[in-house]
Image 1 (spheres, rainbow, N blue to C red):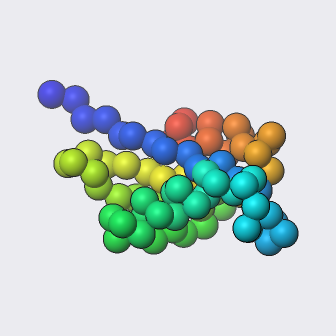
Image 2 (image 1 turned 90 degrees about the vertical axis):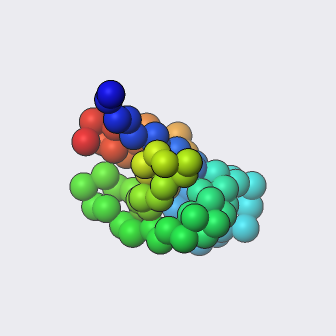
Length: 83
C-alpha cells in the first residue's frame, strides 16, 4: 500500500494591505482549517511559503500559503510539490 501526501494551497497576497480583502480568501480558508485541526503555520524559506502539517481522516495534509503575490504563487507551490 502506498502512502500519499495531500497539499492544499491557499492563495493570497502577502502584504498587510490585503489582509482583510477577498484577495486573501485562500489564506483565510487555510488558516481556518489549520485552526480546526490544531495546526500552526511556520515560514519555510526554502519554499517561500508558510506551511502547516495536519492530519485529516488519517491522511497527512500540508497546508501551504505562498508568500508571493497570487500571480507568482506557482513557484512556491511547485517547490513544495517537488520536495
